[in-house]
Image (cartoon, rainbow, N blue to C red; front, side, top):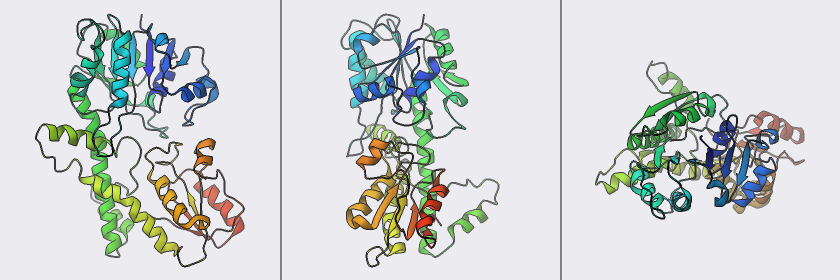
Length: 400
């Protein structure tokens, strides 16, 4: 009988655990003790799940290896970030594999969902899993790969409504594994080739990153030539095969990271990639560009104006501030202009908001400019609150 354990309880692992708990008694493991305490008490740091969903008799949260050793399906959803030199940071994967190496048993299945470069599961993870035991992968225990496709804040494409790839090259317990994954997503695309599944995952986000980089450059070009960007795009969109991407800030854990993973393995294989990183320079530069644009629009340096920024999460309608460009913009302006600038964001967890000097709602202050960095659904509500104190307040759309 399958006994699932999800390792890594962030925005990827937690929805998987909740879905599986509808049929199985599961355990969720995370090495962050505070995260375990929060989830046990029904609190989700990312505000994706309500208390009654988290406090579930079919789910146990733990940071104890001794508890998870009795399970036989391990789904790995730990982060795979990059180091300061833009190379893969594999410390989380390494830690998980070393720990599992001590406790895995015969017939156990391990499925990796973390984003990696092609070949990493076989060449890096499997040797670590075999390191502290006498077991052999493919004979005694089995490894597969199922790239995550979670999109936080997107109710239309939540986990249960999307198609999901599952790469598993063995017949052993295949049917059981497919039954498990049928609880996670509506349709499973099965393949035996792990390296191809790894590649498919990483290029999904690279394609989007490059396209946003292109549209950001077109936006900058239009600004330079004093052209109306939106009019230009609307005209171009009249052609049937024009892809209408929007300019914006590219943050979070996937798009700004995945290109460096593929570029890394390409370099190791002596392939000098030309397009993979082409969007990174433009997208990374948008932070500085918007800081300067805000300075120029508001003339904050020379005029006695009060600015209210709206939104510091990495994208709209999520609570996550990790790898957030809006948060960086807020920090930059706050450090330099102190009392001239405030920020409001109702999505951010209260403790995090307090740490970063963010208000959940508009204060009783007369602001001159209201500038959204993130377009949460309560944007208009917060703007109307700001208008109560100053009916002449200007709403600035940085992308117009």
